[in-house]
Length: 145
Image 1 (cartoon, rainbow, N blue to C red):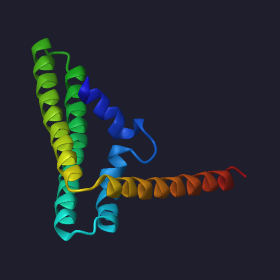
Image 2 (spheres, one colour):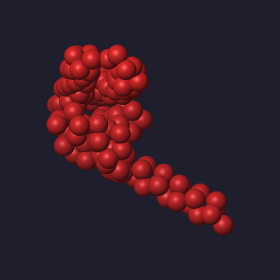
Image 3 (cartoon, rainbow, N blue to C red):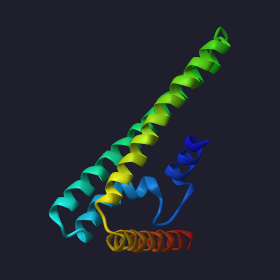
């Protein structure tokens, strides 16, 4: 269940400043650099954000690879239930590890950032997301005319 929720959250189930995938892939390091003024804490937080980003990318790649392998099994009339079971178990174990890496990195990052800095980081990400959404809406409106 945790992996399912992580997938939904990561792949766009949450729009806004807390979109995990977008935040860690595109925004975290920049905003940490803007808000965390202590060089040692900044370095630790950025390293943790980088680890989270790698975990997310690994999770996505594993999910895509598992999907392709599952499709092959579905298309193979000679595949057995045991092959499905083995693939699903292996895929879930890999995804579980990647998700754990992301959550551990996030905890490490949060230990390096004060609550005030974290609020400022999220506020910056929120402003960026709102500006991006406004631009996309304006573009869509121009295109619709």
